Image 1 (cartoon, rainbow, N blue to C red):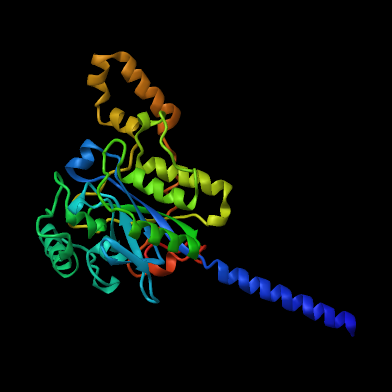
Image 2 (image 1 turned 90 degrees about the vertical axis):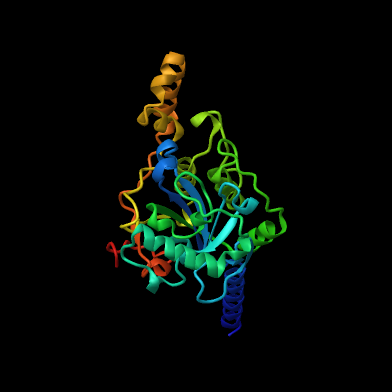
Length: 325
């Protein structure tokens, strides 16, 4: 009897410890969003854009974060080129992708004029606090339109990983308390630099700038590759890759994300550089072949649609689903 009683005590203690461990870490998902380049600027600089999505972090305003309540899908946080002089801005997930409040409102196809009306409607309802002097933006000039309806302009790849409750709370406190003033610099303070800094908050020392590749310039493809490399050694982050297709009708398909060295070669910029100095051209080729290709396994990425987005982005969703279902 005494032995049986001791076994029961041990089982009770183990159960308590397990429950405490469960309370201490409540996993939710986040995702680094690698967005393909598009339009005139995407032709000149085909590196694309980076943003980061959090399921537990929501936008009280575009510049103030809070914990989500049940039923909310979280927010996308990103750095753009000084919109209203802010360094980062946050938008709820569905509006960021589709410029509407709910998945049921997402159109299957939309033209350019229809998209302008959709973005204007969302801006008037939710983005007035940015001020009347903030430009709409377009292919040649960036503005508030970048914050809503991203999936109408380009295809997006989501690299999902899990986060702990304490980490998300700490990030909310850090961003809310810091001076949110623009530090954007295309070469050394761009969107990929900002995303890498946020990822370092979760995976310290993983993302940093180096001389090679790309002459010390950080790109979205580079950050994605480093995240995949980290995940190979840390399976506990449950990395999974998804794709969000571009909604047809507004513009032609977006282009593939490239590194700096690859873009210089594929765009032909390397030719005039070769006339200036053949050593520069050789250096770019070596950089490209030696470091700048960044192979990413994107062919098997699972498709996210407005209807399956919340379910598929959950860490529990480990089995591939048929496209569009």
